Structure formats: C-alpha cells, structure tokens
Image (cartoon, rainbow, N blue to C red):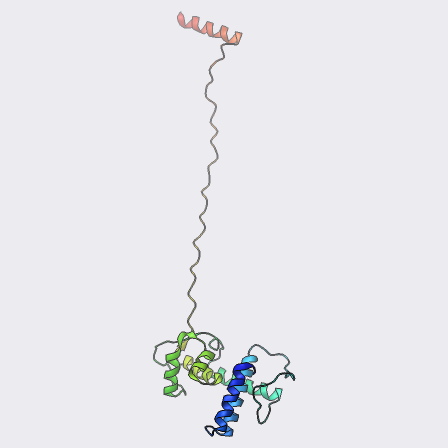
Length: 207
C-alpha cells in the first residue's frame, strides 16, 4: 500500500483517532483490514515465492507486523470463506447488476446493506468499485456479492452474443464454352479448280 491516496487515508485515520472519534483498537482493525485487502488484490494472480520489498515505505504500520507466511495464511482463509459462499471468482472483477428476482435462498447479509448493494449494482460497477462507493472494505463487499449471487440476486451481465457471419456465397459454376462445329464456308471462286466445279454445277442445274 502506498502513494498519495494511501498516505492521505492514513493521515485521515490518525486524525480520527487523535480526535477521539475512533479508538486505537478500531484504528488497528481498520489498518489490518486495509492491509489484507491490498494483499488479497496483489496476490490474486500470484502463487509463487513472496518476499517484502525492504525499500517500500508503507503509508502506515501495524502494531504487530505480519510475516509473509501469516499474510499468505490469512489470504488463504479469506479465499476459503469466499469459495464457501460461491465457488467462482468470476464476480470479483466483473461489472455487477441486480437481477430483480426473488431470492432463492436466505443470506447472512443484513437487509440495509443488501439493499444498498443491490441499488448500486447497475451493471457498470465491479465489486471493488462498489466497495469504494459504499465506504466498505473490498473483502466484506466480496463476501456480500458472492452470497447475493448464490441467492440469485446479483449477476454479471453476459456479453452480447455476436451473430455468426453469413455464409460465403458459393460461386456458380460457369459452364464450359460449347464448341459448335464451324458453319459452312463460302467457296473461293478465285481457285481455278473451284471455278471449274462451279461452272459444271451451273451447267448441270441449267439442264
């Protein structure tokens, strides 16, 4: 966790604790939840060897720092709870929409929290975006999302089906040119033999 937004959030939390609006225990729980949320997001596609970057400067420090093994174990328990609600991560990053259907099963999501989440799920926001909009932790929102999906109240919009392209036109077979026998040719009267034959024919026709 780092950068300007994280640092600003850390200062804001310290201000709330310093002004007495939240106690030290609540502040530590908020920091731990933020740490685990960030770690869960970072480890979503990473199953190899892990180590901390010694040069990184965190926006806040936990009262009791976590080791890599403790962090990985906590993320594993979170994933097990999520899979127990809905054994698929397809809804964790997809835009969500309320189905408007009646629930098919009971959920442990409180009514007001359920209503707020369903009202905000308009088909354009993902679970992390809904968490930021509603001021809740990402993990808590993911738990609610999977429970509501299992009850048939939330779904990811299916991409519009792309129609198959029309079949290519089959070219018509062109019939081969029909070879016709050559027509009769006019006799060449300039040939002496042809001329003689023509005169004989004319004489015979005159008889």
